[in-house]
Amino acid sequence: MKTYILLTFTLILVSSNLFAYPSELRSLTRSFPVIADSVIAQCTLCHLDDEYDLNQFGLDYDDSDSDEELAAMDSDGDGITNILELENSTYPGDSTSK
Image (spheres, rainbow, N blue to C red):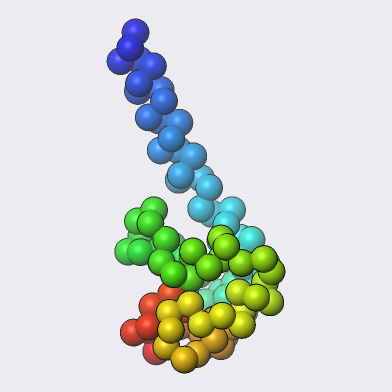
C-alpha cells in the first residue's frame, strides 16, 4: 500500500510539472506576441537546458510585477533589454545568445 501511495504521489508531482509549463508559455506569448511563431518560443526561453530549473529570465518573469517591468529588464546582463531580445528572437536569459 505504501508503494502505491508513493507511486501515485510521484506521478502527480511529475505530471503537474509537465503540464504547468505550456500554460506559462501561452501566457508569455499573449504578453509578448512577437514570440508567438519565433524559434525561441520553447522551454529554453525560461528554463536551463529543458530542465525544470529556471534561467534568469524565467526567474524575472516569475518575480516581475508587470509585463512592462519584465520587458525593460536585462535579465542576462548583456546590455540588451528583454523586449529587444524577444523582438530579435534571441534568448533574454542567455548572455551568449546574439
